[in-house]
Picture 1 (cartoon, one colour):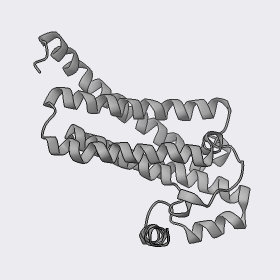
Picture 2 (cartoon, rainbow, N blue to C red; picture 1 turned 90 degrees about the vertical axis):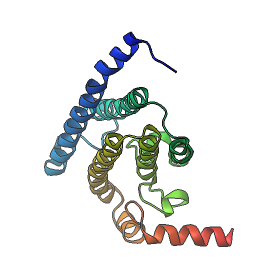
Picture 3 (cartoon, rainbow, N blue to C red; picture 1 turned 90 degrees about the horizontal axis):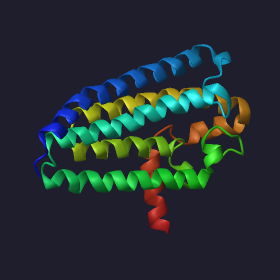
Length: 208
């Protein structure tokens, strides 16, 4: 499919702006999260309500939204590419995003977003303390494969770095709220994924 000159011009104009918004929002969010680690009284994250909650999610949504927009612009610039990109990337994207949505349902949307309805350690949380973060990064890697863009792959790396900062803030909050129960959970279950995750998945398959 051949794009019109006007549309091509719009794509070329929007392309650097989308990337710039990704990088600026990531830098801003990372700065706020790092400052919150240094000064917990700032109360930026976790925050269930208030301006901190709205600012954190607002910046994060800008980053995620612009990542998707930039990936689509990469496809528009470079074309659909080889079918193998889609054969590998699309299933990874769909499955990872599906697991993320399942995690929201399993944990509860409010509890996912900083409410304290109880420490959840079963189900998918027996394999990772932050399974939705893992699958969100995997979905972005799938998007990078589909778009054939090393830059989008780099944005997946930035997403992981942001999640790491989220986690460091959340762990302190959870340790304060749940005490020994969360500390024991930290010892028994990986922060993201390690060999214990795969061993437990293998055992669950063999037993099931």
